[in-house]
Length: 423
Image (cartoon, rainbow, N blue to C red; front, side, top):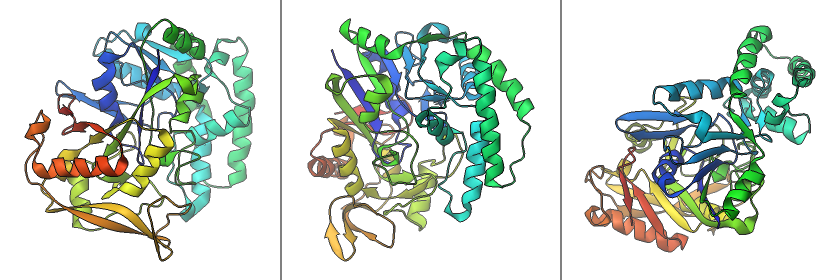
């Protein structure tokens, strides 16, 4: 048996949560492999909107087991609030949600350190969500981190105090005005840790591999997007983990030859939250209309998303880096009503046309070269089959499939799980 993998191909916010929810019925295990509570996966069904941060998006299905893998970083305070949000839906998460002992813990001082670091950068800030993600991964790679398994040890608070003291010294070093009451933050943190310990902690790599050998089906769920990958994204305006397909191997302990299908999710246009280069960004009425129609606001942060036309150069890059086998196009309904649809097929880079993503895509180096398509005016949100889609939409899909050399198997025409067209 093999592991299927689902990830975003742009700068995040592609709609991964919805598709995981739609696909969960086909899998025994949904496993999150990287990222932290800076990721907001939005699911909508039965007239209710749900936002998940750390918990895998299969949690609303009673038949699946949800695993938080070793590559994830967990904030106990945020995590417990997320669990409390599930209580009203009578979800037995103590039975269906399990946590890797090797996942790292976000401390209150990680969040403070994040704020101090970002404030010290001034205008050069990277647009951190200030959730403590970066500092936690820094401690992980610096071999100072506290892991979920440490919480089972009787003296784990000694390790905590040592690391928190180190963080406070670092905050002073930044010499910025960060007001906080650590004792107050720690009360909430330690209470959350005790509640977190009520869940089942596992050796996740052994659990996943044993499940595969037993014939169980596994869907690995990524967070953020490929262009935010710490190695292959638009560095330094990236997240702190590997959001690409390779991250599923290191974030779950799954060998590369175990991965079968790689589902790549992208919007019919492009968005980005926070700082960083964005070649196809629109600053006109079209971009503003996209944001309004698409309700482009961060699910967790509430920050407005920057909007632009589909960037095929960046999308091809993400398809190649991830080895995508199937594509899923989200938010096709948002483009209804635009007279002309544009797609960036090449870049003008230092006076030369190129079709690959170069080292630097800052605006002074890159100008997108567009191909135009006739738009459509029909409302797609009530459509349920491919045949119902306007010819212009079908032509758009056919063009993208040819350029990306990868089939588009799903077209999403609305936020609800039912507003999904399979091709």
